[in-house]
Length: 140
Image (cartoon, rainbow, N blue to C red; front, side, top):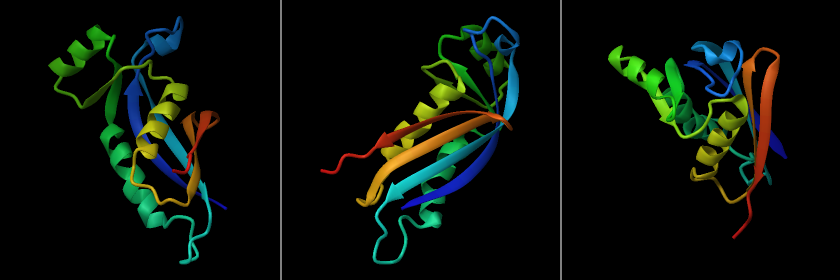
């Protein structure tokens, strides 16, 4: 069985690797779709949506209304710090694909119930563009 929940946030970034407009500092209205697959527990749920929110909301709150910056982008880091503006430094290029991996790694490290067997995330950078990835949880 699979359950899903959507989350939204606003965030700025730029892509050092980009040869076009995305090299410029810009922002998006992001959407995250997260799905949990697992067996239905005796309470009739795979995972309580309240618990999904408790897992995901702190990650979203850390990013919302910030600029996410690749640690190699020293010019932008310096400028944002001079402005005393909210930012998050990461060790990757801030593409939708890498944001998927960022979310998956944070979610898999959360205290998930043992019935969860798979996590899938979709990061929508715009209304009609997204990246998607999933991770299989190996039972111990």
